[in-house]
Length: 124
Image 1 (cartoon, helix red, strand yellow):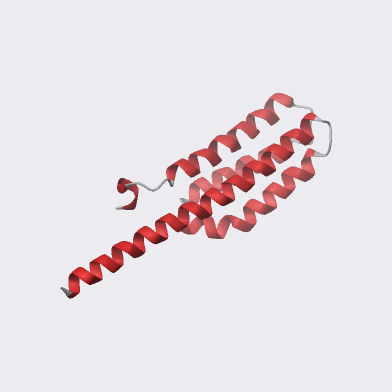
Image 2: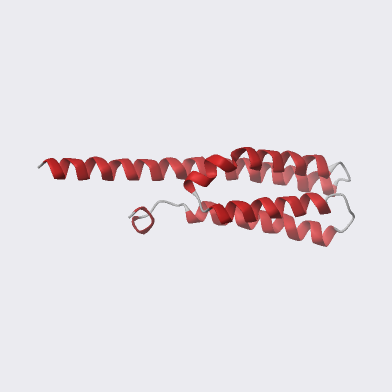
């Protein structure tokens, strides 16, 4: 009976941590998406998109440690690299390249959320 109770406590703990991680990742990615949209709008309106991209980069760097607890570190690094490249091209008038990196960041953020959706396979 003691083993059953220990197994139940362990199962509930694992599921709780996984669901908590999903909400953390979802919140961070949603905020990053909002900042990304602000950067795209600033670029399209001819404003200082580099400043918005820098804010996104700082936000992502700040949240990197907590994200690495719940997600694959290589995914986090790939998103960070795409944000840096997006920031680099935000200074130029290369619309196609800037928009390509913005799309890449958006897809990667969406994929990170999708990868952490709780289901039986991913929890166990």
